[in-house]
Image 1 (tube, rainbow, N blue to C red):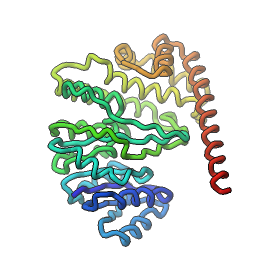
Image 2: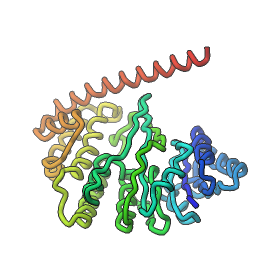
Image 3: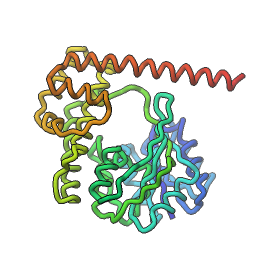
Image 4: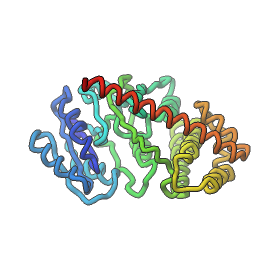
Length: 340
């Protein structure tokens, strides 16, 4: 049996869609564990009502402790041989469980692709691995971002650890690294079976304590280096692990124009702080960045050109806003045509 764990918090608008996609699986032998994490919007009541409609649905009501706390509560109550995680604002294909069970075989983890819904676009992402060695496959999955989340993976419950409830960044990756230390083999299912709905509020790290976020990002970076060295017997020479740290920073820098809480002077100070950080400078020297915008902005930052860096980010923000407006207009037109 597969235990599907769904953390629920402020999910009133999307919860039913998520649960229905799980109830409609082609494999019926599963339990759906809805963990109401002290949600204040009535989501907990919806969980209770849904449990009355399907005996496979179990509900846990708890005080708010965050998504990691909710997932851990679900793991503690799970009865299935396998674990699957789903986020309450996402949904899945009807054959997700069937395809993952078919794919895992004698391996200890199965990973599938997904649809990334963002700014009106449906971006299909499929994991690709060279298959030459464990360390090469790890770097491929890590570089593609397929180890950062738990919701597109099938786990064996007996091998699963727990999510670190003290962290607000990277806890999903650390959970996966901890699991992989005990796992023997990863199966790749080259089908987009999950639908990931990305928040489109435009918020960036700027709305939180940046110093804490950077410290956490560095912690994750060091842990990943340590995992890879244990796996491969040598340090990563490809620049893939360093690139993930730099990309976290660049994502923050590119989000600065959207931050309405800071003045331009304060934003330039943020960029300057990143430019002067010694560990970021060292990691950046060996970072294998692929995206052109990352390469250009990183080039400017490594030379300390903070004003040009910010101007480029502003230009990018104009393009992003234009794409959002176009996507919204297209959606309205489709709605009007449908209504007619």
